[in-house]
Image (cartoon, rainbow, N blue to C red; front, side, top):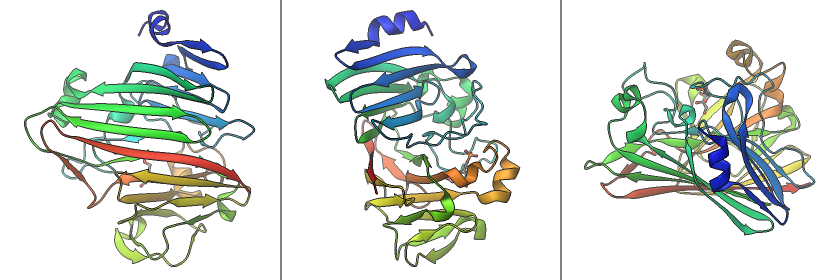
Length: 304
Ligand code: TA6
């Protein structure tokens, strides 16, 4: 990827807005964007957002101090895009967990200044252009467009367009790792009384009683959940609103699982919490030939 050429086409330097493509860790290209309201860094591998810092805030996104930046390897933290399946593949256990979009190299196709405090960048991934081994896992020609609007409220939209002649079925998630002050003192509201599938207990269905507290491993898919969810770590609240998603995943591996995973960093589990806007479990999306599906998510931070 020729960064000079990309910068000629897409860089911005305009009255407080700066957008620049640069070489990131592991020599993986990334884009840094800054305007009057916020700053982000997004890796082109996976169109993976690594950081979102609204003005006068600390980062809203957690990135492991032990995250490895290696071509073709998923990064621990940030906002991985799980697509075209969520979790383990339904039939083939050799296929990578959470699909292949998070490790593929995406193209930048558009950058725009919407105002002094709102900048938009669009990434694209065409499955037809990917390596043969990926096309064997996913033989349907599909286009993904990921539009990120950097502002006081971060807006993310992932549009899947089916370019094949068959109906396709996808699962997906914005597998966002939020930075929390301490997960022990953090609660999640908005999922009360909802049914969830409890992964550590063999995906047994259970009912959520009250807000979610974190005292041990939590790995759950909440079903039929389209409403606003809030993370409250006693220092700030993060509101999550979404469209095109009927399931919400809440995950913290806790101490022992984190230790086995090996890339969460010392006590990293205390500082991270994944609340994922998903199409997971029974909530898969069927898209007709020529049709599209849009998953939209926005994050807003309110200081307590
Ligand atoms: O979204 C929760 C989850 O599916 C967990 O079960 C957990 O293992 C996690 O994602 C991380 O997956 P990864 O493939 O990134 O190691």
